[in-house]
Length: 314
Ligand code: CP
Ligand code: NVA
Image: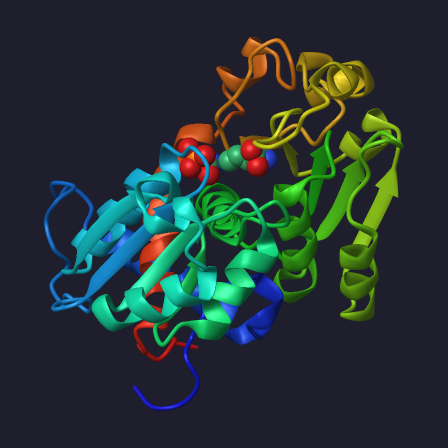
């Protein structure tokens, strides 16, 4: 492939048409393999002869297994390590690690403690780098979530999504997605755990419609989707303070009843029933959390194919 290396670090580094094409490609590939076994390779095998390295500085279930399934369904292979297994865990620099790995594999997915480390990795890497979650964002998750919304309810443009709870990394990626995908985002978060101010400012400059409130009922009212996440993200130390501040944001049946009658419930998982979400909601009829988890595979296949230079279909 000629041209700049196609890193996938944050959604707003890609233009709206490319992001739209990624979602459409994900859907197309998913539909084309309906009924197939999970290990069968797509007919065009766009990653044949390519290897994806995955590095984890934090725990993962969905990101690890969905990227592994994704690269294999595209006809490629994977190698996985935790940072603790690598010399990275003994002080080798991010930059040296990036230079070495990109001589050995065709792309790197990294889940890192620090967003700056992913940016430094990408700057030094000769191969595409994909953000598999940092303290600041989780772009792959939001692509999977939007794919899920559209499978159930059609185009997300013009709809209203409500984020309730911690203004965290996953919330930031929804902020990044609001302008290019054309949805309205209502965010309800406590004063102590607000959404990122710089993200909100940049999204507003890009034309995003985002409303921020402290009141979870106001954010949920009439929404087409209600979304939450853990109150204590990986690396957060102030668990007791978080639980105290975030308890009013628990998504229960009463809160869901304020949303549109066809509203869907989203959670990126892992979930904590009785904390950020009541069991009756996450295990109820409006919940699409298992589709979200599966769609990590399909969304990431589109991302990987794009990183490998496949032209997005617009
Ligand atoms: N949603 C998500 O990224 O899950 P994991 O932490 O299990 O990868
Ligand atoms: N906000 C959570 C997401 C986990 C997938 C965390 O960063 O731990």
